[in-house]
Image 1 (spheres, rainbow, N blue to C red):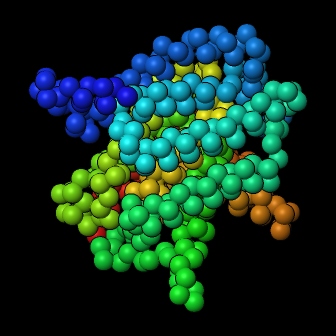
Image 2: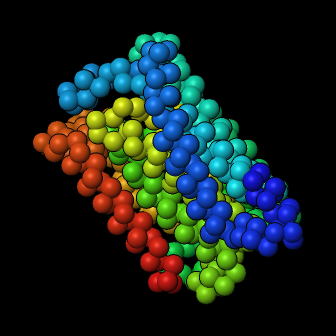
Length: 370
């Protein structure tokens, strides 16, 4: 909105030409998101306390977490607002990719909000059942896939897959059956990416600042990727699937970094507020959506490496217990396993952040190692 207002006067005031640049608007969006998050944080915490929206702690998790019961939750509302407002202010709102990302953020956040709300109403740590979450997330993912197929019809989205380490190998995701495009591989793959990303961040959100810090790292890596994907020179040099429309997503990712960084100020140990499912699901869904839009779905496995490992730890633990009657880990997700080994919570968080940074840096190096 600010972009459209200021750019309308760039002929009269040449200094306003600066708003044309993605880098300027990304920095502005990131700072705006940071300021909004920092300023609104105390008010949101106070409101959550007033309405007694506190965290319910499962009895089976490590005992050091039991003292966190009652800590304000649903703080993800603050994150969503702090991403949404700067994006609307600084992005080019005629860009359809921006709306796909924003709507994805809001819809996945809505599922998380419902889940958190039910926990508060029921006075329990259980909200939506697993199949209900998956159904709602699946419906959102289907809506996004349909949008992508429509964009593809107008040559605004590529149905090819970008494969790390390979320049020329970009398999087509549009399966033609009896002369009719079905996009079946694209549909199934995108559903897995979006639902998996949303739930992986959700499962990781179990320690003070853990998910927040990892989201900042992943969103920072995506900020770089969206910029080079939309930049004609960089995209050609790095042999990426070039898409000029993707460049505006740099602003969205920058806002995600700023908003989550501001939230981390209050979410760091000892946390004054938790993001809740409304935060983890919205951020996970947004990260997955951006990766799909810029055709870096496979690289997302590396960018969000810690999220993937956390999710796999739950899958392995549950599968092992159901099939063998034995647990592989002391407790899942993985961060609780290390707590039970004797690691203090801050140590687990910082070390997982370090691993997340290593994963992200490795992911960016693959752009050149192709």
